Length: 367
Ligand code: F6P
Image 1 (cartoon, rainbow, N blue to C red):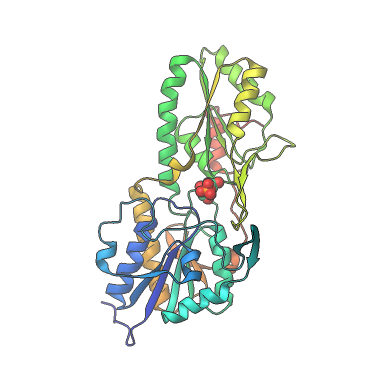
Image 2: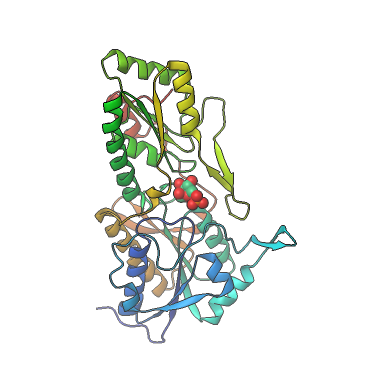
């Protein structure tokens, strides 16, 4: 049995960046552990850094986190377009940027926070590191369906997004088979191919295109035609939104000026489909899986990971161990210094065993 802290402490919590399955499971674990094991109070900030800077916060009690383990989304709300250090304001139709980190620090002082748990991806962690450098007691928790955060073997939400994508690939296979078509399936993942690789292998994709392995259209054509010669007149091509041709660039769908990373990828699937139809005369359809990959109830494996991450984050905060991000290393949880995480992304190494396994079963990577 742990001893309750002598002087009552208050812990803050917020979710930042794009949402992902399991955010609520982490919030629940942090809140329950902080309240019940360490006798702390917990304050949740609304809509990520927006709430931290503008001071929109709510007290969290056991009842608030009861029954949310399996719920997608985040009860606190989130934002991927607010950064305390580059705060966008509209002045006479023109966007101007300001450092509002002092306001974020003031919010923490106002609530007498002894620590703040920040759940987010790389953009969120980059700002978390700067807040930590200002002297705030920060503990990070690694979230993203992209699985691209440095310092951890895995982010939570990834497994569920992989399952969602591979379930949808299964459905697309049915209709691809019936019509003898090439189905191009564009999945998220930003600059990393983890989601495309893992869901592609799980879905038995014939071609998988990753940002890490620039593709050659001719090689894709050879693979599709070789299948046709073997009597397989349909194919499944899974393409990461960040995939690009050899010597070419990624396809940008839009820019979000106020976002820490303004680039929004998208459209490579449509472009590929056009090339395949024109050049190889194969009937093709495109499905962009999009934000459906970020929703839904977390899988059991994510619920377990989220619970472990959340408990560990609360333990670190209660012990006053700040400046790190909870991370999975093998089966263990460790705290990685935020400075080792901020500003870095984890890409799929070209010699990753899953790429080798996929090649062994005949998957083409377009190279
Ligand atoms: O980082 C998560 C993610 O879903 C990426 O896979 C995707 O590129 C991006 O966010 C989409 O962002 P938005 O929600 O702004 O469209």
